Image (cartoon, rainbow, N blue to C red; front, top):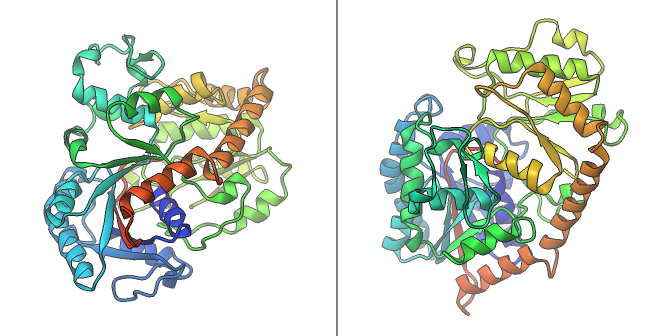
Length: 442
């Protein structure tokens, strides 16, 4: 949801009206966690605040109690059948109310939106929220499988245009047989439907992934418009207020952080989907404890059947790190990459070996040892290359700030995108379509 919201805010700042549509399973969670639910009205409350953004919901046909994480195959199939019908009805309702849409932007895991757009005669684009390098890997995997060696051999190397030499262990996990086949089917469908997609908007910027962007631009129009993050992270003021939150944040974090020296706290987060195994939790906790560094660890709140899916903190961990660590439910700094699934192995390779603003943990069977956790923390905080990493991280932060400012490459790409969707006529509106996320931003 966050990248879609950030894109919506960018478009609104340029005079565009945006409707964000998501499946209704998110409605209760969003409205419950929102401190001011009037910021993003439902279909029954259409006075948007901030001006220009509305939030609406469509049903995927499954009950609210249905476990979509556990039954992802059924969830994705329900979205592309019942969900597609209901979204089409929703768009037609808005059209009947004299809303003329100039573009539909969708999540790449909802490629069936291209069929709706074609049926309604609305141009469509996709927001690719992962790295352009990952988009490139998926594109060639499905279009040119002969470029790939046997993915059953982890030590095999492969060369793709526009990216460094990769090992099989650097590839996105969704292409492997161990991942649910529905992911590969959906990605294949997305790549096959690229001819119906007029714009690929990428949450990256040209200067960050120059060769990958150039390589993909030769194959299909691509618009790097990132980073799609809060201006606050770039040292700028937020011009458009409001948020869409799936979980409430802990305000006590700020008070605790204010007591710590600048650039001293290790921040740990695995996003809103990943759940750590007991061994992963134990090793991460032990490594953090032994590092003797202050840390802020974000842990998703338990849900039903949580004990079957994830691990718990070691019984003595909170007491042993009292005063040094803070756990909560809820940039310009070096990164420790703990590659697990989807795009994470590829991004970890990119961060450590290309951008050189962090380290990649060595994992075996998706688990890093406690010693590896401690080693990685030491390497980015006081190791011989730590100052170089910090300097590089600040350089990338400054580059990110410049590309979204007036005259920057990402800002110019958004302006070009707007010019193309309005086609010289009066600016009308865009609808963005976002399904329940099934992969995370690195």
